[in-house]
Image (cartoon, rainbow, N blue to C red; front, side):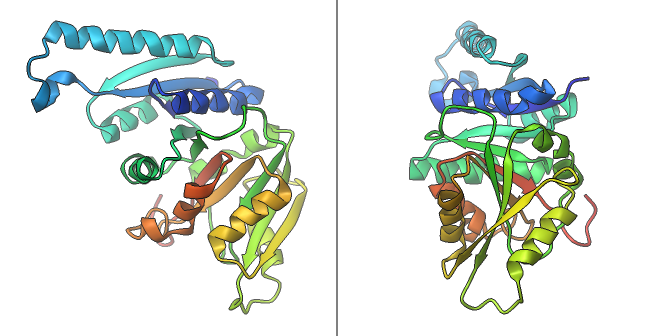
Length: 281
C-alpha cells in the first residue's frame, strides 16, 4: 500500500493551500492523500431547529461534492471523507483507516483564529494521534519541494517517537539542504551547545545516514525570535520543530516556544512529537 497523508480540510483557501502543499511534499514517494472534513450537522445546532433533514443531507452532499472537486485538482491521488461528530473521533477513525505518515492542516494567521485553531484543533490532534503534524500558514509561498530545511533544536537531548522516525524516507526524498539551528542564550553554560544539537539530530535517525548537516547559531535572542532569525538567515522554506510532551503538548501550551514561533512563522512547519521519558508510546 502506498504511504498516505491525512489532511484536515474544509472549503477555505487556507485549507486548499495545505492540501496542495501536502500533495507536493509527498510526490517523490507517490503519497496518496486522505482529505478529512468535519461537517457541522445543522440538526445538531439548537439555534437551527427549523432546518429539515432533507436540507441537512443535501448540504452534506454539496460539501462532499465541492471537496471532491478540490481533490481532483491536486497533483496526487486523493480521497475525500466528510465526517459528522467530534474532531477527536473523526481523526481517530481516519488514522486507524489510512495509517498516515503525517497529518496536515492550514493555519489562518489572524491572531484570534490562530489561537483558537492551535488550542482546539492542532493541540488535540497531536495529543490524540502522536503523529507528525504539518501546519501550513495562509501566507506560505506556492507549494514546491523543500530546497532548504531548518530543524530548530535546543541543546537538551530528545528522542523522537516511532511515528516521527518513520518520516526518514520522506525527508530523504526531497532535494533539500538541511541546517540545524541552535539559539544560544546569554545564560547558557554548556560548552559548544550547537555541536551538541547537531549530534542530537544525527542520533535521532530522522535523516538518512550520511545526510550533510549545516549549523546555524543565533546568539542572545529569545528562543522564538532566534528561530525566526535563523529562518531568515538560512532562507529556509520549511521549519521542523520537536514537540516535547511537557511543552507544546503540556498545559502551558500558550507559553511554549513552539506556539510563539507558529504565531509569527511564514513558512510551513513540521511538528515532530518526541517520546515522553519513562512512558510507553
